[in-house]
Amino acid sequence: MSDSKFDTPIGVVVHIGAGTGQSLKELVAERPDHIMLIEPHPETVARLHEAVKEAKRNTSDLSIEVINAAVSQQTGQSPFYMLNFTDLSSLCQPTALTDLMQGVRVEQTMPVKTLRLADMLENVTFQNGKRHRLILEAPGMEMAILKDCAATGLFDRFEDIHVSVGIETYFDGAADSQHVLEFLFETGYVLLAQDETADPDWPHFSLHRNPVSAKLSEVVKTHEIEKEKLQKQLSEATQVGQNAEEALKEQATAAEAEKKRSQEQLAQATQERDFARQQTKDVERILKERNAKAEAELAKTYEHEQQSLQKQLEQALTEQKTLSEKLSSLEQEQKTKLADGAVALAASEASFGVLRAKLEAAETLRAEAEDKATRAYNEQVTAEREGKRELAMALRLQTLQQQDLAELQQRYAAAQVESRKQEDLLIKLTQKLGSAAGYLHGLTDDSPTPERISQPAPRKNTPKKRAPAKVSGEAAATSQKTTTAKTKTKAAAKPALRKKSGST
Image (cartoon, rainbow, N blue to C red; front, side, top):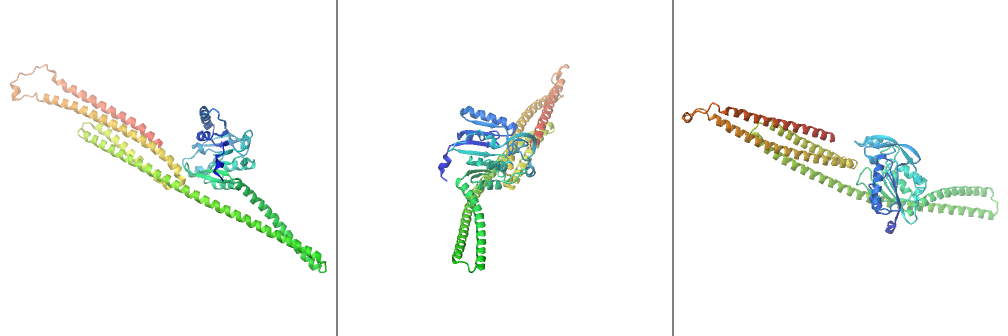
């Protein structure tokens, strides 16, 4: 097939399971004649309408149609299973999917409108000379929709089919990717590309209908029919020959002309038999060559996808190592700062127990951070060992780990700010206590000494004895403020810990 075939302008694009319109921008860039977006999810279709409005705002001459319904083999209503992963919602019950994949669950079941694809396309014009594409993202319904397309002749309209289907049977009554591809191969489609980047358990296949392959499939079927006919004729001819031989035995005295005619009939039957055998060999040879070519292409595609998957896994491991190194650096920096704060607080530990409690709270936060980082690393290692099937879940868990890391960094920063506030408060308290100690020391020096005996006695109404009470009041107020600050810090830390535990 020449490359110029793929330069043909795009005509009609039908996207079953369009979601929120993630692929709309790419479709619009190809400038098709008409785009039909089909989405049954009631909440998702509202966002899809917004995406269409945005696309039309940028390009006013677009022809885009949005249908809020599910594609099925019959028109009516069917229960729609809405999963917490919206793109896995389906008309089929996800029994195997929820048993196999942890975290996937049905959140709601509601009735939705169902239509046949042929009915939806009744008023759509498919222009000759343009390529028309069917994008199928309907978990569990892939085989049912494709068989309905074959029954209604839609395969003659769609040169390209893009389908996403699970490698295993995850839904009741569904088919896996191998059976779906075999069905499409039988109808004349050839595999162009296979993409497992988004989810190895749910690869995306791009196929193109090859007229030669379609014709070959028809020829093979025709030859099978002809083969049966020829075998039947051969059997009949053989029977005729046997009857002729019996007749010759019974009519030994029959004319030589009749014998010659019978021999000619036998020779013709033999020739027809040999011709049938040759046709059978030709068909077997064509099938063998086709199977060998398909196996070679499949092996090449598999090797390419294996290399791509290995590169993605190595990249994920590199990113995990970088995150671990950053976390270790943050932990070391926090340890250093906490150690400096501990040295400063050790000098006044007996007088400022409240400040020491706050440092212990900060140490608790650091321990929690180490524990969460360790659990995140263990989860990543487990996800990597599970292989291709759990890689998608590992990527989602990695996103949660990055969010946890950002939250821990914020909490570390808050702890550093609190530590600096405590250091400032400690300095102020130390200064005030130093002043108070100096003042008390001055009062103590007022006791009688040889030098003071020669000095005039102080006046009786000197209010020096009230000064210690004033200093004690300031110290008490400062201690009260410290206790209050500690209480607020603990109160603020508890909701954060509860929130983190919930997210984990």
